[in-house]
Image: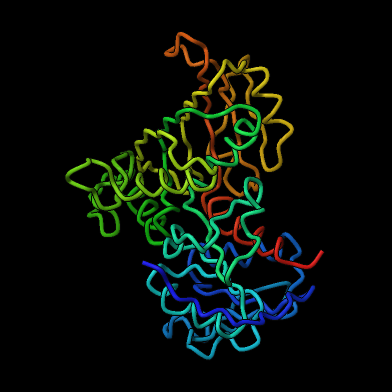
Amino acid sequence: MLIDLDRPAEARAMPAQPVVAIVGATGAVGVELLGCLESRKFPVKSLRLLASARSAGRQMAFRGQQITVEELTEASFDGVDIALFSAGSGLSKRFAPVAVRAGAVVVDNSSAFRMEAHVPLVVPEVNADAMAGHQGVIANPNCVAAIATVALAPLALQHRIKRLNLATYQAASGAGAAAMEELRLATAAALAGESYEPKVLPHPYAFNFFSHNAEMDPETGYNGEETKVVAETRRILGLPDLPIGITCIRVPILRAHGMAISVQFDEAVSPEEARSLLEAAPGIRVVDDRARNHFPMPCEASGQEDVLVGRIRTDIGDPLGRTLAMFVVGDQLLKGAAQNAVQIAEALLPR
């Protein structure tokens, strides 16, 4: 469904030091947005932290000062230049048009606008040019699609991708702060020999993994996470007909998603060439030490801005040698969410 954003005819120019609002400031991604603005030294003129009424009045630290969280209302965006949304698709659909009419550019972390033709879906290392001509809203991709396309883009620039297969190993952070806390509590209970009844996720989480908890389509057998990753990966890479096979699994890791990727090209690509292309690409750190059996791990990706790529090898399932296999891990709360949004905001600043 097309969302009428009602962009002002004469949108104001982006100042070098914008007024920034974070919608959903107290959530897991909101907290990371605050941290990214600080760690990346984003030139904020002033900052507004917006959340629900129950969070209003809470104090959050930013650059040595305490900022009071305000209740999100339709008047919250007066004078705001950039609004970073991370509060769910329902609130985005309601308040993003309000922010746009007030003159702000919205960077939205929900799924609300990702597949709208007039809304760019952006990973800055991959398709920053897609931001040109935006109508007030820029969509931040699904976390798996963002992390995967950072690793795929350097290869796709040199060789045409014919098919992808992905198996994901997704952390609790993808389901929010409540799921992260459930993993902590369930693990503590399991270690103490006590029972724990799941409240956030549908299955026991400690020392267990299961099919991603997004809603399942009974006809296709694919869940909502899988269909989102397929559609968004195609859009980001500019390959609308790319065949993609995918299985998404929730694993008992606090943060940082992993994924095993098998990518088929239209010609043979050696692991050596792929490694060289990846090492030269922005936002990637190659971790590929076969001698020590040291490859990307969530414990090393957590809190890191770079996407880790390793286990780069020829897929022996392809007798023509056109397929590479690799393992990719990225911090879901950073490159999969907050960091990518702040990078988009940085690209909006005047040069």
